Amino acid sequence: MQQIRDFVDDNTEVVPDGIIWTPDPYSEFSLSSAHEAMRYKAASCLSSKCIWGGGIPSKVSLFMWRLLRAFLPFPDVIKRFNVCLPSVCALCHQASAELEHCLYQCNFSKHVWRHFQGIFGATIGASSLRTECHAWWLLAPPGSVVDWYAKLVSCLILWHLWCSYNQGVYGDGSHSVSQTLSRIKQDLFLVASTRTIRRLGPGNDFLLTAGFLRRFHTPPIMVTIWVKWMTPPSGRLKLNTDATYGAAGVAGGACLRDSRG
Ligand SMILES: [Zn+2]
Image (cartoon, rainbow, N blue to C red; front, side, top):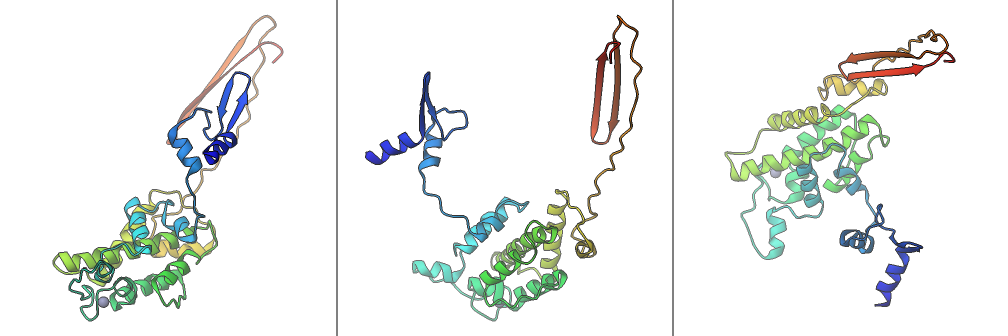
């Protein structure tokens, strides 16, 4: 009880005409704002910064969240609940269908990972799926174009390996390596086409060569034209108007002045 009283004291402010609830930007109390202020918040880790937002499709982010917590229904994961399933890798048919194998150790998966390592010029000698992900997330300077692509591509590789695995288990057989590669590149292109990507140096040109985007965004050149208006005679007003239009929209302006300008 004392804890709740302290919480209320810490989050309220008494003013002459009432009480301000400080967790809410409009000072109005709500259960959601109280819950948000009270709930335990874990420190954000690298993975949570790299798998959510940044243009990564929500279904892929959710998939990554399940993957990093070993919640995907691979036979070795389900085995923890004393349920044993047939366990043959649907991608190579030569090993057990374990999460680490299917998405990383399998020859099929390794081919895909190496293909994109080659495009990005990355030398990653990771020993596990998690360290491979960390290597991609730390591949380029934070905030750079390559950094954004590296985070996205690592998530898309895993997503499409997962899709291919499921196609092998529940469909007519897994996709081929080349089909998986082209699906990843297609998704990269589609996601990139929704964003404004600027060329920040020659180190970005490989993105064009690899077909990850159509073109870099070129900001429009702004031209300033100075116009001198003649002031009206004394005792009169003068209304000057002008307008412009273009692909980005239309805009107009007006200026009412007297003889003093
Ligand atoms: Zn395999």
